[in-house]
Length: 116
Image (cartoon, rainbow, N blue to C red):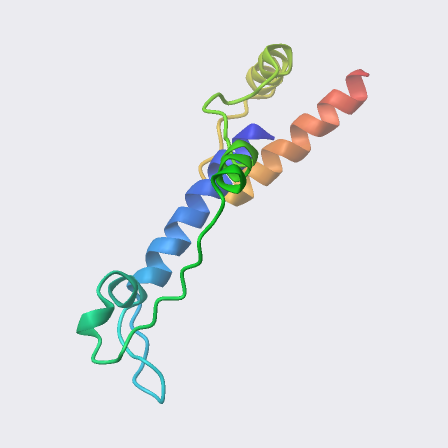
């Protein structure tokens, strides 16, 4: 599952980069690139508003704790080692995209269930 999260994060990062760099057509709203509109609103030709609200530091700490991500591939060393063994036995490789990650997850899940 952790492998899928890494691949998903890569896909999300690619989407964010694409979205933030696309050009918004000139209509009744502000036009330009979202990245530039956010970081340099004074150059958009429109008046920018600041809607920031103060946030209690306790709430920030709670959010930071909830959003902590592990840098390891798998939290459980035994599951990781067994998954690697299944991958080696089956000639499976690490996924490079979301589709391959989902396929690998399905295959590994099936192996775990059959061995239980």
